[in-house]
Length: 248
Length: 248
DNA sequence: TCACCTCCTTGATCGTGATCATGGAGGCAT
DNA sequence: ATGCCTCCATGATCACGATCAAGGAGGTGA
Image 1 (tube, rainbow over the protein chains, first blue to last red):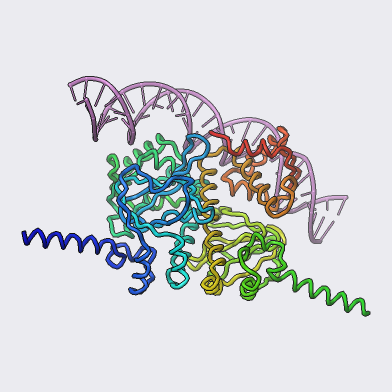
Image 2: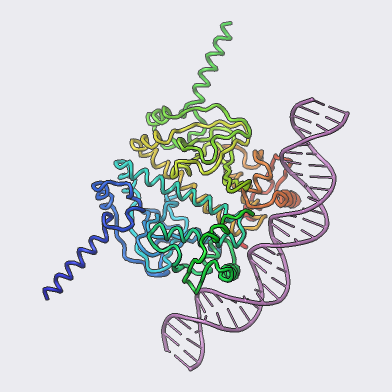
């Protein structure tokens, strides 16, 4: 009985811990990364915790009113924009610590739906309060500018990929990039699980599913990777990187 | 003699007028668009006027240190990123009132060179002073966030274009977008001059020069546009828009 | 006026990756 | 088990646009 009570308290405490920036394992990557402890508490105060999203659930829908940006806490999501009828386009994948929704500021509406690829938790950051707080906290403001700027740079890289790279190079780039992002988050850069389908990957990279399948097969034959369903083992990251950056 | 002196004074005054945001014809589109008069003066005070760039001159080079963002005052520029050896990629064109260099904030270096396509004047806005000022002027801060957000949205549109659209649709989109941008700036949306070469257009859209040429020829045959060198007359904007947004 | 550029156009051929078609593998409910 | 999904793999064919090739148009300097 006493044991149960102690457990309950531990549980509450750890929940509390987990839901504060100070104790978040992502704090070195996330928006408040540049903040002092006392400033972080101010930032922490404006954040709303959300119930976890299940696979396939949407964080928000294309066209709905922009109120908040979201930091991914665990899991992963895809951004999908629909134009006309049935013509979807996957424009981004989001991993923990990444900021979702920044492209909605301008028009006060989200330009795409964002959908969980697996069970996913996010921190909701109401934008008007973030903006107000960024007035008082230059480091926070700077980090916000940097986040948006980084996304711009990443977009330019994606454009280059889409307009100049072959199918092989696109997939090599995709795996290299994923590997790097996992590494930065403290996970293995060599062994991970894809949370997105082949169709999502193809759509994102501007390739048909069949092409993705075929090239993964070829990469496997060449000893670059080992793929089994959604489990990926990168056997030769060097070669993959070389392939990704190759001229022509 | 008295006349000459009066003219000289007029000239100086008009120069002075031209180089202040309050008198700039772009003020309704540019960064300080949301500012009150007195705030605009503060903003105006941090701006550095630059000597006009001649065609082919660069505003800054890829990799050079990021210090300022630039607002285009007149003329136009292209952004070019080079990767490896000789593999250039045009990632953007900039028209008057647009903001150049925002993608350099994150890494404190410009990720691409920006080159004048014709005689071009810009306003230099030192970023640290802009950031500081954005602390005191919420409208300015908001406008800066919106500018970056808009660029993110435009990038996503470009990705869609590069990964899902045919060559015809890409060119139709390109001309529609140019037309719209000219319209917003008070120029004719139907008749304008391209400041960039076919090679630039092709590179930007992920197409070979030959393809650009051929499709422009076809558009002309179909009575959509009239093209003579770099002079463009849009004869059927409706059809062009339809073509650009077409499924498949 | 000439040669010499760069920029653009047009024609012929070829290759990458889309599309069409089929079948297998795995999950899940009944 | 069975059926019914979705997801993935693989084969055959086809088309869009790249590439190769050649020549014209227009500007610039000697």
